[in-house]
Image (cartoon, rainbow over all chains, first blue to last red; front, side, top):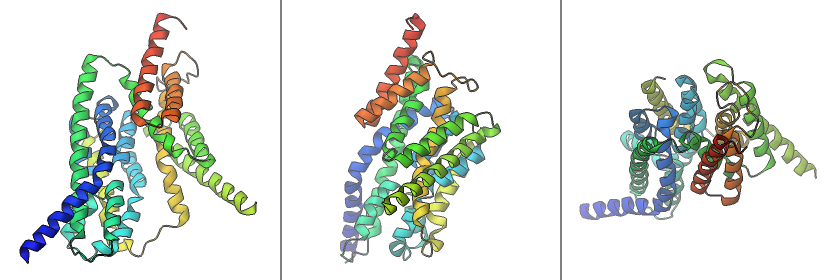
Length: 241
Length: 110
């Protein structure tokens, strides 16, 4: 019986890792780019590695790197991280029925690794009809694969960044602007999104001289507000028409 | 920049969201409005970071001209991004455009 349990746990663990593979591959360029650009933004090697090891949140890490590069005060970056990652509360809420019966240690480990990718994969497994009691091993397999990959990619990126810097700058100081533009484009699916970005960008330029890069935060809030306002107006029009 | 406090702070808030609120999260549901608002956070922050970087390359003066390679590079990057819909192609293409435009400016062709 004990052997069966170990086998079942192992199967869940490896299935979790296997089903996360496409998302792991998708994260590879992001991890490498993060490591490559961090030096230019002014993050130390230890700081870059520390972020991937202890924070483990892709989009928040990119945004923090950008804010560091702009010279933002750290409490503001922490506050921004809170807002950017707030959506993860939804994930915790969705998995709660399955996680609440686990011991606190398991809950803590699984919560630490609850990225967008692992949530997407794990929620599917928890939803399966079978009553396997080891479904959390599936989530563990997924998160360990994501975590290992993310940190390896950060190391590769750090090494690449060092090499590129020694060859010459080769537009590396522009790379972050290019990376962020590439990351913004998928969000621009409708007019409210364009409006949010337009307001945020304009406000960021107008408020540029505010101390501690406070203008960045205010511009972000202005952009979000503009997006919601446009969104509300658009849905009213749709409902009326 | 105090990197230690930055990383510990980021790690703490991220973990608190993913774990610390676990006991509360059962009683907690996001309104549709909150979910929608959160969707605007990443593009709004990213834009607030890069627009000043492209328009005010020295950090203070607005350079709305072809002699600003950051602005020219950003516009070309956005076009490449729209067409390719691929992050790596966008970054490499954008950086190439930026470097080439710097050469064009240095050579005095423009």
